Amino acid sequence: MDSQLPWHQPLWHTLLNAWSQQRLPHSLLLCGTKGMGKAIFARQLAEFLLCEHPRIHNDIPKICGYCKPCLLLKAHTHPDLFRVEPAEEGKQIAIDQIRQLIEFCTLTANYGRHQIIILNPAEAMNQNAANSLLKLLEEPPKSTMLLLISHRPSALLATIRSRCQRFDFSRPDKTVAHDWLIKKIPNPQLAPLLLNLSAYAPLAALNLVEGDELNKRRELFDTLTQLPQGKLDPVKIAEQWNKQQVAQILHWMLIWTMDLIRYSQSRNEQVVINQDYREPLQRLARQVNSRYLFKLLDLQQDAYRLVMGTSNVKTQGLLETIAIAWTEFGR
Ligand SMILES: [Zn+2]
Image 1 (tube, rainbow, N blue to C red):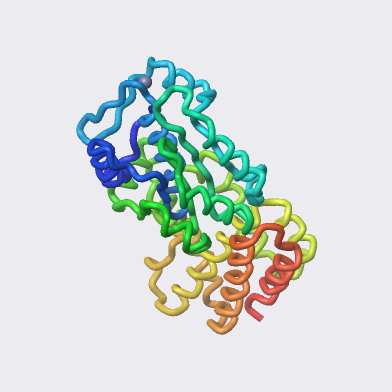
Image 2: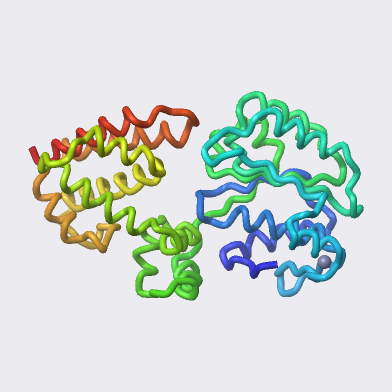
């Protein structure tokens, strides 16, 4: 088992207490924004429940690491653990997948302990899938533990939410997040910026340096500042954006626009979240009026909501409108 994430400690405390008293609920809803480590928590809980010699040490769950279930989990072949995820990121979880899950619940646990299901993310279930899962939640099989992960619990059926015990993964204390992150990245001085950019979701902050995201962010910023000069074709630019992670592109645009609004209103450079772009943002803020900025913000927020809320949304048109709006910057 990997080491527990420090901001999960209060959740482990509650859960392990329930476990010691044999009062574990059948269904847990693990909620919180992306980057809080909900999937890691679910996997660690599954490991703990399936190990033949689990123990608690200083409020931390421990597994033996050598029993058969532990070895099977390490090899990702434990037959009592069932994962349900969309076939592709951003796609839906279909009813067939929930049928397979229900089928899995009719089997007896191979190792006699628990059968564990990790469904991630729960909001990816379509209507039929959700209704079908609801039936299972109404009469959960005895040794089954259902772990639903949700980045947006408000998007779930209220009846699903009410049948699960909810665990909220709230943002960690800033010092806790900072102390954790500096041990994980090669340039610890980047930690405050990374955490600010990810709204203090520590794993999202770590992802920014582990992937190519910071470079993509720089390219996007360069493009946005060139659009008003009329040298780029907004339709072609939208096509390029559309081939990338659209939600992430909109996220960056939104926090830049919010920085522009905050700085225009306060003229205080400390309010700027993108501290590495403080100077160009200050320059840009002097070129526009706030009515334009709020219009841009609305446009981007609407697009972001659509992209996050529904799969199969046509993003090309949305991105074109936004790219054209950026060409009007400062006019
Ligand atoms: Zn074990």
